[in-house]
Amino acid sequence: MHIDVLTLFPDMIERPLQTSILKRAQEQDVFSCNVINFREYTSNKHYKVDDTPYGGGAGMVLSAQPIFDAVEAVKSKRESKPRVVMLCPQGERYTQEKAEEFAEEDHLILLCGHYEGFDERVRTHLVTDEVSIGDYVLTGGELGALVIIDSVVRLLPSALGNVESAKNDSFSTGLLEHPHYTKPANFRGMEVPEVLLSGNHQHIADWRKKEALKRTAERRPDLLEHVKLTEKEQAFIKPYKKS
Image 1 (cartoon, helix red, strand yellow):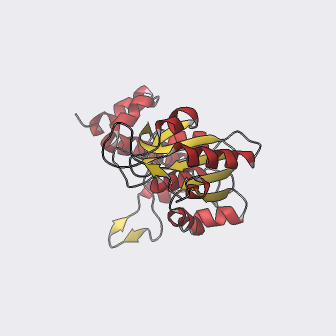
Image 2 (tube, rainbow, N blue to C red):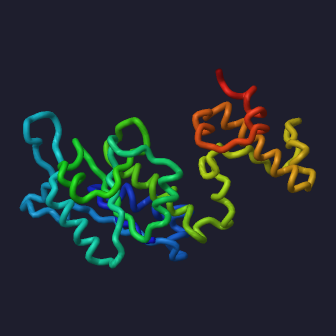
Image 3 (tube, one colour):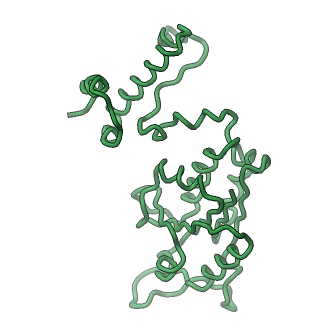
């Protein structure tokens, strides 16, 4: 996979890319990432990339020209047809399902907005996806772009040390993830559940499924609306669901 990020503040993207799993994944050629300052593509002699909105109003709007030219330049360097993703508050709520969808792509272009956002012609004629990471407003799209990069890259083959690591993550199965414990078995009188020490893999799997169901029912019952449950599982979670 290759990811291009168009931003006015490259440092906000480049520094996190040089840490932890993202750094290792690039070193192992799991993915590549290019950060572009789209100010370099403006035709304005003063290097402006924004202007006042037609019709009046507060704030400035990012002009269409530098965005179009930057995206076209990026597309010309690769044969694949990219998904062009705009980070904006009006976009589709970002989910694990969307991350898994993006992880199937060869090329993503992420557009990081600022000020009052982009000229609408960018949205209607250039963008394939609009994404919001939550119901709040940030000063720019860079943090959202990093969220997408991190959540997508960890799903790519070989990005994580263990290929099974991402399969049972919260939301990947439709449920929140079960609790985890590690050594020692007894810490300050707080003991690890006996089943996890039993060595019986079927009993452990059953315990984990029940704990995932319980945790989801208690914390995110809305997720259960999209999960197929057996009658036995429905009966099990009933005491934990909030009325």
